[in-house]
Every structure is written in C-alpha cells, then in structure tokens.
Image (cartoon, rainbow, N blue to C red):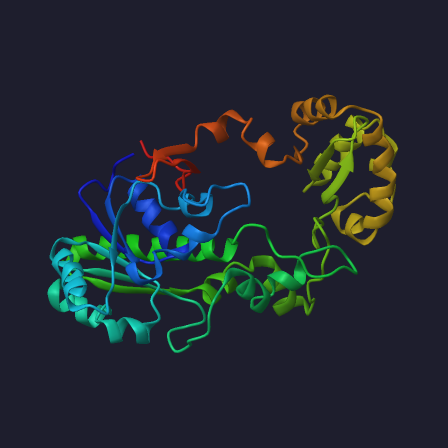
Length: 355
C-alpha cells in the first residue's frame, strides 16, 4: 500500500511513539528520514536489548518501529549539522518531533523556525505531560498517572503494568490522526499546520468506560485481573481438560445460554442468579466457580470448535510463539536487513486496507 508515495517525512523522534508515526508513513510508501543524535549513538532503543541479542546487532526493540526508514546521524549543537537538516526542510511535508519544546527552540528545530523555511510544513509535536512540562515521560509512568496501573492486576495484588508500552502506541495513533487532518487542510488551503498531542492526554482519551464509571456512577475501578466491571462472564479464564487456558467474553444473555449448552450446563442459564447480565455481574464469583467443571470436561480445541459453531466469544490464551502460528499474524510480518547485517522482523503498524 503506497498511498503516500512521494510524501517526505522527517522524523526527529526516538523511542516508540514518534517513531511509530514515522513507521506508519514508511509503510504507506512515504520517504521517511530518521534523524538520530550522533552524540548519543542514536536512538536509545538501539541499546534496549534482550540478553540473547548480539551486542553489535540492531535491537529487536528498535526494529519494531523503524522499518523502511533512511537514517542520518546529526548533532544539532553543530551549525553544519543543523544546516543539513534545514536543507531537507524545503522538500519535506511532515516533521515528527518529540523534542521538549524548549529544547527544540534552543536547537532551532521548533515549528516557528522551520515554517519560515517551508510555510506548508506540517509539524507534529509529541510531549509527555504537556508543552509546559519538562518531566521525563516513560510509558509506565504515564500508565501510573493516568490510572491504568491502578486498575491492572489481580484483586488484592500489586499494580501491574501493561506489557506493551500502550500509551506510546495510543499517542502515536492520536498524532497520526491529527497529521492526516492537517494533510486534508493543506490540500484545501495550501497551509501548513502545527499538530500536537501528549502522552497524558492520549492516555486520558483512552480511559473510555472506566472513566465514565467514575464520572457518572462514582465507581473507582479496581484491579480485576482479566475481569470486567460491567459484564459477566467476561475476561474470566478457564482451563480445559488438557490444561490449556481459554478466555471467554460473553456480552449478551443469548451468548450466555449458548455457553452453558456448550459446557453441558444448561441449568445455569435458567438459574435466577444468572438470568441477566446485571445479575451475573452481581453474582460473578459464584458463577465462575459453577462454570469451571464444564471447561474441565473437554480438551481446548473441542471447546473452541463448539464455541465457534454457536457464536460464543472465546479465545485461546496464546504465548507469542503461538500468536505467530495464526496465518493472519504471519501475513503482517515485515522483514528488512539493516546496514549492520541484522535480519530484522517486525509487525506492520497498518492493520487496514483500502480498495
């Protein structure tokens, strides 16, 4: 898919959120030039390696959002290197930056400076806690500040972070949406734009029903493991006779009846404690214990076949190796050989198609 072929993107960003925006445009056919700090040996994620990775190879973390980019190492404290960047700006369409605004101004890499070179430039700025904040912003900190860390984990257990830096990914989506609107505006008016989001605002915008549970019902979401505060049985994990985990996501009364039939527990669907979702939420703990013996009777694949036949939402709890046994997952793999010879594999950031 090369809908943005001919578009030039300058990436003044490191770690995950900003580079994920650049990765999107690279996958869409754009020319993406990633500028890395020569003084620090480049993007810090080059050094974020698993114990099994070779010291001189490209890190798997770096590879996750840096497919298909040209890389230039520059030191903006040097006037010659600043000029090399300025020379790219007249032909650029988009600049993606996660510099602190004050640092960008000091280096001459802020929007006000660059738009004097190219008035039609779209400058996309990402910060952690807002343009006036200089606080360092790593994903787990944002998960904590925005309430995610408090909600995640098992009841009575310690807070648990999401294993993907999801706030970064959410912020990347927000910034992409803003850039796409700015491109539409430029098509109509010829004018450039300053597009801005923060990790904090992106996280808050993603709280969805957990926010409204507090704002409307006065409920402070508590750790529930994989459970759901509004639906039952939803997110509960059960083990089959071959000791393989299954998660179910029953969202309607009809799906609950079908689940009970699959488990050969039809009487549960008629139990007055479980007749409606509201009642099932109230009696969640008892319900889960009544359902367990049904799962224990059958091997996982037999249960999954039965669930799929009747339309009961359920999933195998897969590890990463098992995830990439799914044909659709294999089709989303991108491969690239970096200059250091590392054969990199990553997953597309694009999960849509246009015809």
